[in-house]
Image 1: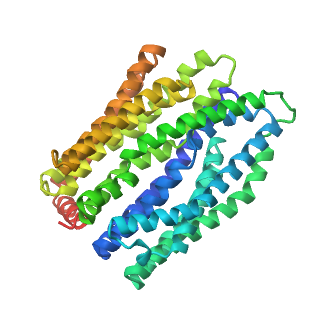
Image 2 (image 1 turned 180 degrees about the vertical axis):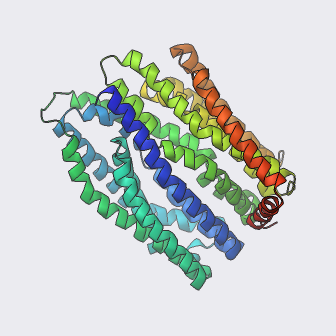
Image 3 (image 1 turned 90 degrees about the horizontal axis):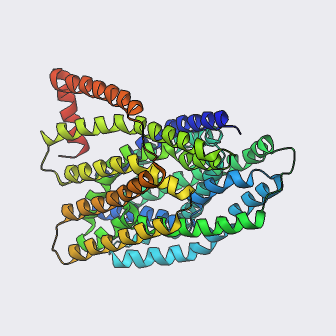
Length: 475
């Protein structure tokens, strides 16, 4: 692909990611709120913890593929045979790892259930847990392969169709079932949707592969690239594992163990609310940021084009973040005037503000990853992990409170990205162009002012806003 094609594919992938993940996150967030109000605290904690365990293990066994596959797909795509072997190797490796990890998953589930006094297997069957783990793992690697080629339209259209079926089935289950039966029904619906997406995607993959493959075999250093891919994957795997220590899927079991299921439930609700803002942007970007920079990296005049691509990427991220910044500030101002003493609200504001600021800086980390600045990235993340465990140590000894702990964790996450921003600025002199960002900020400010005027000055809209907040927060 030439530069224009790469930029076009980048914009198209962003649009398709936005379409799918907005629908997905909104549906899952509403489902979480309903389950929080329908289930007992123990049942909800069992459901929250099993999801955390499954997706945390999947994150840990991906061996850095989520960042290394988009980085090296453009390198292998120059040669038909090497590209085909690369894709097959990735699929087989991840599938074997998933199968091997199923017994370990069940052991971890039993141990966690006993440790947290939740009896997870009494609420959700071991077979359902294993099937969900396998389905989500295979679906994740397929999504990664499609998105690394800028095939978001082809994959997300299939995924969105089965997401709609899953969502409808889950809301029907909520109407007819309760307790353990409801939990197993929700998980069964998710397994079915994931398996259907996998089957249809596997049928689609060979046809797409034939369309993009070059007619001639361009010689590439396959062994050298494979070695570089393994090294890159290992570094990304370690960094991702270290960063996951402060993610929801790791924090929920820690909070459950230290403070009980009630606090863990409040944290999950606040975090899921924050993820409506964060995940919509993150998943809209997806792997497109790495794919864009990686494709540019393979071009002959990459030095000049990389700066253009980076400016395009940071401007695109800003255009996605600013509207959510405006909505968040308006939302925080509004709720602080009506339900400001709710713990969930305080947690939501801290986590959401941190997430949005982090997203603005993620492009700088992606550039360092593509440029393979391994030593620097490892140093930043090791320091980050040390600071995180210091915070947990202080919390364990009751030296700092629950909300203060979450705030300090958010600050540590943000500082690590600010260090990367400073390094990119000093090393490459890359940064966002102010003239590209100012119009976005102006448009956002106008929209926020209009929304603020409607929700505060129009009596009916104002009353509805207060009612909605009180219902959602169960205040």
